[in-house]
Amino acid sequence: MHRNMDLYKYLITKAEKLTDDWYKSIDQSTAVGVYASKDAKDINRLKSQNYSFHEHLIQVFLEDEHEFFKAFEVWLNEIVTDNGHQSTPTHIILQEFLNVQRQYLSMIESFERENEGTYTKEQIYSWNHIILKAFSRVMTRFVEVHDQLSLRRLKSQQELINDLSAPVIKLHQDVGLLPVVGEIDTQRAKYLLENTLMECTKKCITHLYVDLSGVNVIDTMVAMQIFQLIDALKIVGVKTTLSGVRPEIALTAVHLGLNFKDIHIAGNLSQALQMK
Image (cartoon, rainbow, N blue to C red; front, side, top):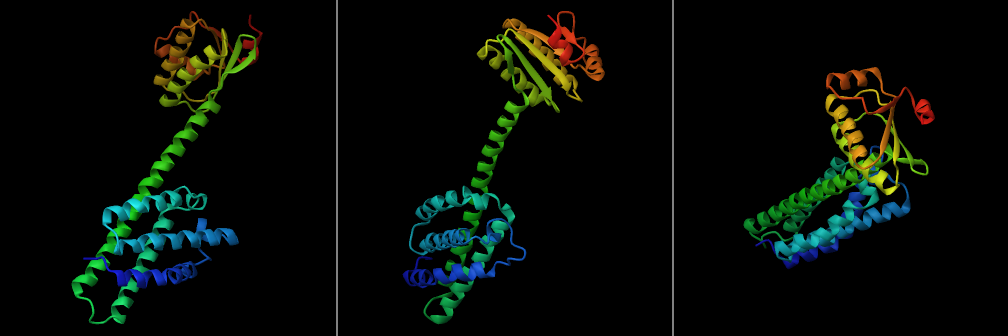
């Protein structure tokens, strides 16, 4: 019941004006992210994206709902992956969606006045209903796609952080160094174990210096995993020298009953490197 060629034609002729009016309505004194740029290219790109939105949305008055929302995915993915929109808070983007929604409800009202008596209340209601439904679906889907992208980016950044915070550095020939710095939680300790074994094998390291002088706090679970790392290295033929063990870490290990008997230990890294 919401499909109507006359309404479609009316809106498509107003699309450019909708974009211009929308951009003019942005308060540049408080605008942030993509909406605050003064660069002409950024502004033209933003307007082009908004106009493209209108071209897609107005199709709802011609197409089947399923086909309409399927086609909208292309536009959504373009916006979500756009650098300008990525640097803009999500709630600000959603607010602009609502501003454009108000434009459409106002346009439908204008169309009704210009064609007074031509359409029933049921038809007008169906137009408003489909606009509200379309914006609700598009905004919800935008948040979903945005969050998926953010999670992938966060995972990638976390992997990079892990790589940088647990590097196995080859010193010479078959000797390597693992400087552990910062806070170690259970997840990072697990990564430390897996990555260190892999790197020692890949770099043909048979003697690894593990320096803990950059670690201030360590809990029971993490202490156990560090000793598991030393045991695992021993199994694959890597001799380990531990340095920089703080008193609190030593106490934690003793309370756990962990055995230092077969572990080479030095007070600091300098001393460790001088050991044979």
